[in-house]
Image: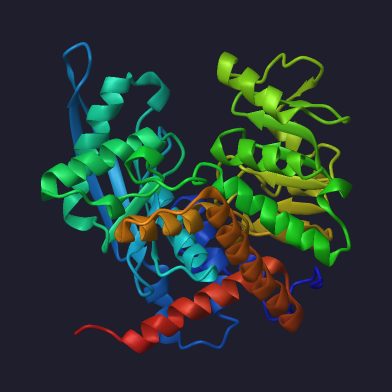
Length: 436
């Protein structure tokens, strides 16, 4: 078990602000701070520091489509490709009103470290369209997806950049993506996206993969404390694809789920929530409000509720310096990308809270995406048991590496995870060199 204190050589957040420019969003600065605070302690060649902190390419595209009422509306889309030293770019596509350049750049950087940490032959990328998907009809969403795909055509492909679902997108969106790309290149390219429906080349187990990875990592960590999932009470912020499956799988293995939430708020029951029943209620009503037999709470209250394990599985920057001092959980498992700000991370560490970082804890999704990509390229598909078994192997092997590094360096898990990931990407860059 690593010591909760930070190595003396690791500078505080306020000492690292020079590593980023202040004209970027807090999320982009946070992603850079997490990278920079580790890189400058690793004794690596400073030549590569700026290269690794800079995205290789950021594409902004205009996506005009005809809406159902006949008028034309122009949407803005992005795709950031951060680093491909280890292989093709890989990362999700999100449809959300908050999508912007800084967000996709930050998420692409995080994806680079995540892919490297779990040993996938990928670089990091991220993309999205500025929209409110729930306000789009199915036909409008299809037209928008197809137009966006066409705009990205020059920079994506099975050996170039492989998108996947993220917030606001799903298997259906990936099916449109696949069909559009395939029609434009003239052949069926199963490897161009992952997260597709199983009927057209997707992998069984992909939908629950990120949540299953969260469960695998928490279970492996608890074993180092001589505990099992049956010993912990868990609160999960976010009840989408990641949060629901994480809560469901944890409950199936004995954990007591005391709180869950979606965007509008959440529910709490110290005796334990029936996750499957809550899931059905949410799908039928679009909210968890008034779910029978529970007490209502806000998303902010969930973060500080009475529990042993907190799983922030919603969006970035939810655990802030204002919230962190009041977190009662002793373990935080980052199901979302970048849910904890650097200031909050330091507060949690000083308070003895163990944080299992996003680049480790939520890597299950991209890992099964890799399995899907491999299956598509080989046209040979696995059954559910093999997918689950292979995912567990990858997640547990990655945890063991991070745990060993944390013990060796006497540091927290985030520092250990970033040290491993950055080291792998830096070595690949060094070996390949610069062209020309």
